[in-house]
Image (spheres, rainbow, N blue to C red):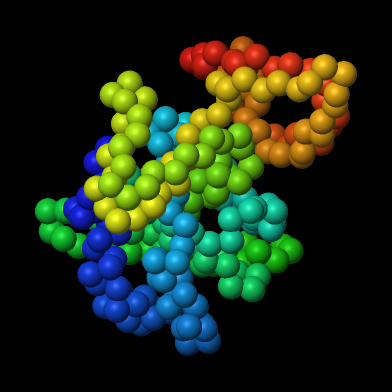
Length: 239
């Protein structure tokens, strides 16, 4: 992937004020419109670039329309930008008990972007409030946040004007002035502990394969536990 000025971030910079006014015009009358300005302050947000291998596995995180938003209370990332590719991204920002999200789908040919804004009300027994509702886009964002904050990941930094990777493993050329955080899979790494030592494996969410012949991926809560072991790198297998 080549990151350059023909991507959504550049479109947002060139049209920021116009986008802000457009989003404010779609907001509820009692909305705090100052939240919109902080939401679209893209210069001060961390930029997470999801690798191709991660994007291809997001659908394995199964969600329903009755998804409990309280899980979002435990996330580590308060605000940021998630890039799925050059043209699709999510901008999110925490405002009190609410998590505001804007989705952009940029068209290079027309130099325009589809814009969807929605809000997660992270309080007990309250669900999702959306404007321009699209359930698949909101689910994809939840899958991204779950992967970023609750599943094992390896994080690499791609500095401006830097190239990493190769043709076999997510080659990325950054021609922009932005610093990106590349989020990749981490389950093929080797983890070791010193002999006769123990460590605490923190509680987390993981994918467990269930059902007949273990073909159904299920998001499962894994309790914290005390470990004393050496874990060799696992080989990826097709399910």
